[in-house]
Image (cartoon, rainbow, N blue to C red; front, side, top):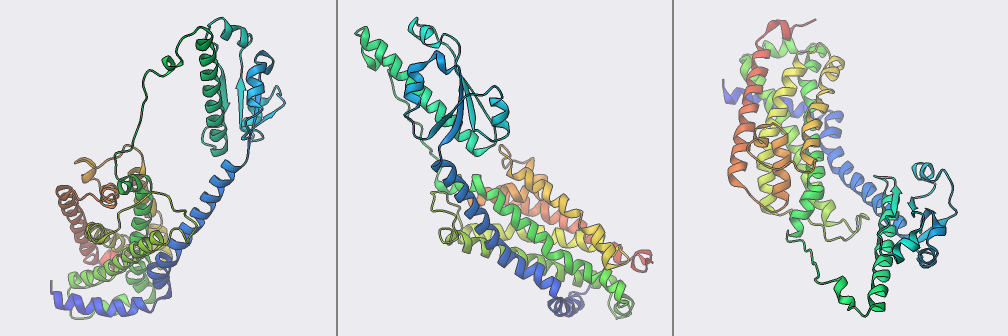
Length: 397
């Protein structure tokens, strides 16, 4: 293979790619515009929803309120809990989001408490619904405070020190730095989006340089040029690789810009941090390079098999799900960087990226993941070269 001839193909294809509006949209406009827009929308509505949920009182129903008049009198003074008249279909009301929670007070509650028994109050709520879970937390806080007040009154009546209720204090503190907390909570999502754009940034160039050439009837002309099939394949690979890298770089730059302006974008000024410095950006770019090479090689090999641009779309578009799945797994709780996850393509980049954005640099893992992804990319590139050497693929009709 001649590198100089491959670079000639690369320069020619790069000029053609930059004239294609679809490529510019997928490679430049979407990462630059879509990322800030997406973060602004998510941040705005997320912040608005959380603010509204905490501002409004939680509508609840209490079953068995007649068994605890003192408790109900205390509950009526809590401004953030709105007690509705109890109805027999209270649980369905919670499911339908007409009320937020229902509490069940057992029969003989006051008499059991006075007798030293421990009756149980149960709370029904809608798991996963933010407002319902907030109502549950408010009821639990109230019931815990009321229980402590009853216990204190009983101890004082017997002349026992109230301090016996709390013989010791518990203070739980987060020992992880804010950058690691932020990376654990949102780093996976951010890198998931970058990986998606790394893939989609090369989709349209790959289809245009392979199936598009066939459809326009220019593939035969290119093949008559005095270069080998390997040079041609490598030149096209470099073009798609460039598109993926540029798309990834713009996504990372857009991420850094959005995060630095998160207050202006309505994302709040919380203590959540992600480490976006020269070291993390350099390490992140380094591990994304072989991933972009892997995507470029696979896209060229798959798109080349198609007879037309439309057919190439039908082959390439479902591959997005293959990219999405490891990215989603990488965001799941408990999925951590290990030698097992380091061997899985895409998943290894996703998990490693969270660690990098947390400010840590596990160089052994970085080297291993970089090397393994390069191996996968080389295998995919060799498959693409073999496809260019098959006449039944190049002239498939």
